[in-house]
Image (cartoon, rainbow, N blue to C red; front, side, top):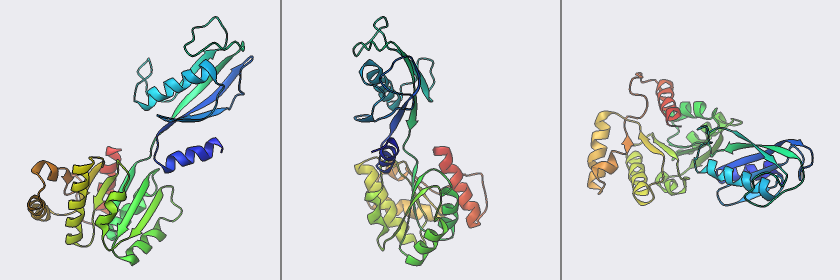
Length: 270
């Protein structure tokens, strides 16, 4: 497969990677400028020339994936130079081609993931905003007509959008990828409560969700806190849900205004 299809496969499985590109060659070298390699925490595909050159690039790529900054403290794309002769220090074996190469290392991060339960007025407005981001989005509703309307609205958008109709939305919770930011805003407070219980149970078991936000008033949240406590969740666990969700200083009750507030808070978290 080409590096593009490999990169697409990594994106689909939400696997972080570093793209290594041989951007310059001076003299003799094993590969031509433009050769590429994809490095993950436990695998790689492609090649930029093998030997000390390739192994050194892989080592640095995996340091980048682990969050280790460059010597100067930078964390963005990096250039590395390799001299291919027997007079330079080497760690993974000599390469005596006689030339020099420069490689560029670039993060291919996992895009943000957001799941929105509820495709009503606010959910639809939120879909219009978030679908213009480079993100992976899930929208779920128990009403098929609402799902169909949202699916039409976001067709052809830059984001990867998944839409689901389910009479039991809480059953979708276990299928969400790790790190997902979840927003609960259905048309039914009973659905909202069941979703909050399912989300807190997942956090208790796996602890792998990004954040959980619930739309609603302070009175609704007071009732929910009591019911969640009766269901066996601790005050600390319940406190992991943000309600009301959105920027606290941005007022207004119009669906589009609420959606802007919620989207802005999400972008801050990203």
